[in-house]
Length: 185
Image (cartoon, rainbow, N blue to C red; front, side):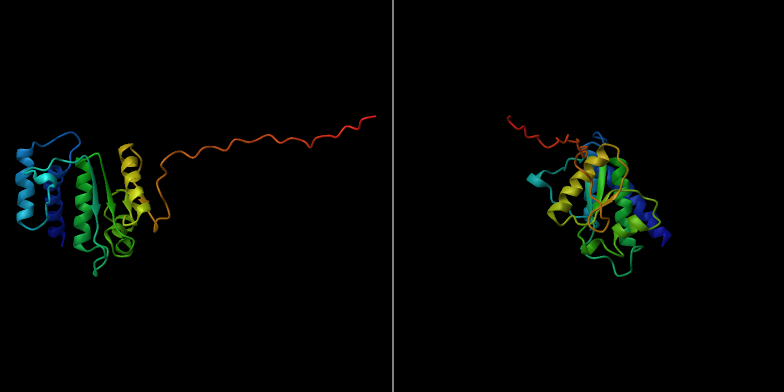
């Protein structure tokens, strides 16, 4: 099994820099053969918008986990491969988030392994990315990654959500004493 994991890490180390960049690290003539090779082996599918022959590299990435956790549990090789790819995307980009639906993010999922497992990988995750609130949390988690915040789990299962702005401190308001009624003599 460790040979399989090592192979997944090596594949992720090759694939990640072809997909994402911090500042245009690889020219298009180098990324295309890498992506075509992974697609030819059916490790990924590519649908490039606008019919472009060479997709441009992104600076941020969202890795979407399967809709249901694997039957073999959190340490399933597919989970470890997703976490390894996400970790390599993090190294090669300006930020990455591991995201999934609530049913797919529970016990035995890649997000569960990321948070509770022993991978040693620290990445932001969002467990309810299939909802409007979850999609906002994904965007906020990417923003927090860009600004150097410590990675954290967000969503329903984590009971946390990244804050879009600092919470203002309430300002005390002075109270008045009741008005005195003057009698006219």
